[in-house]
Length: 343
Image (cartoon, rainbow, N blue to C red):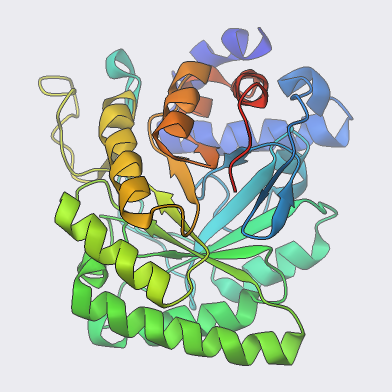
């Protein structure tokens, strides 16, 4: 109810400015002890996934809090887990503005942010200051000016820096907004990257005395054969989960709308069906060997239930929060509490 009153004001602002204003408001609400009024109290629905105990299966997708500046406020909204980032080794400004566009008639967003963030050192410092003790995923990527043949260096650097702070680490190889990044999803490139990550994880597990789960986030713009090949590599290298999916470069469902031809990744309702299909194809290819975290086009409890029926164990929200507000967290958690848990 509260978000319905605030949304018209936010939607009059530039989307990036509205994003910052909403996060600032959440910080204020948290400090005032009012987070429960903003989002309600999600149903308890414990799940064990990646060897971690999730209080409910509804998470925050990466991208909303790139630097971990708002961990406590977001954690107080009732998410079963939150994911921050994408973070890169060095700070970078991202792509020139404007770089985020609402397509409100389609409940969609196009963004070409370009991994704008203040660098991994700032993120690690923010995590160390946060009081949140829930499950925290940290999403890592490469700097835009790192040649693709040296991309593994960036991922390994970030992995080393966040390893002690993360409940799980997500390897983002699927954003369409960093040149050539999706090339890392190709068989040879992916094989080399996963081999490097798996080897480094073994060393870090010995150093830290714990094995931190590794997830990989994939694109929706893949063929069924692509998905099958990737699934085989994820299994071979001991990856703990797959996040499906990132944003799409396809414009199906928004053709003719203002800003529909803007470059960037499309999220929201037009992505729902495609993302769910990828989850389904991935579930077949993985055959239960590792879990799927579904993201992309979850704007309702019904959308979340469809993802779970397709084979997901957990879900993540982002664009749905823009259009539905924090109350969506509780609605989805309540709907999923009725479903049997999947590891």
